[in-house]
Length: 178
Ligand SMILES: [Zn+2]
Image (cartoon, rainbow, N blue to C red):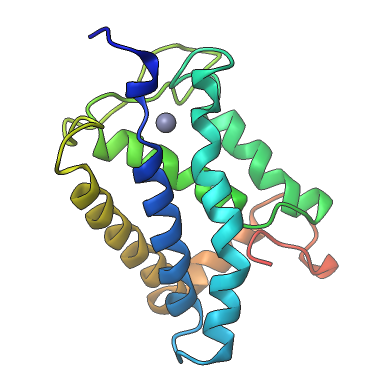
């Protein structure tokens, strides 16, 4: 559609998504509303927000919605807490950025880049400049938190099975949620 490239990304929406998601995660993971809740919010707020901003770095380096908007990039961020014990929660921000781009905007992302440049998107969403963009962002964030709540509180065994499937040793005390 042309236009300046800086209009192609919605930094405000991704920050809003990251901040709301971190606050929501605090209450989903530690529902009591006590010091543990606020500690979780503090622990996730900056990493998740940084992760939520990261993929759009490809507006400056590489091809936008391809170079840093794909599953290999997500796996790199998942590998850091598992193998190096750092960058905890940043992958959550990267993942939610993908969800927001796929579900909430009119253009998809190249999930299998560099193997394929095809962009995958849902026939939902609004343009990043739409007046409804923030509302769509809030709705998507609430739906994401509902999914997390199901995995944490309704079917916790499923989450442990998925984590157990990763190639690392849980006995080391390091996992993607710590
Ligand atoms: Zn993006």
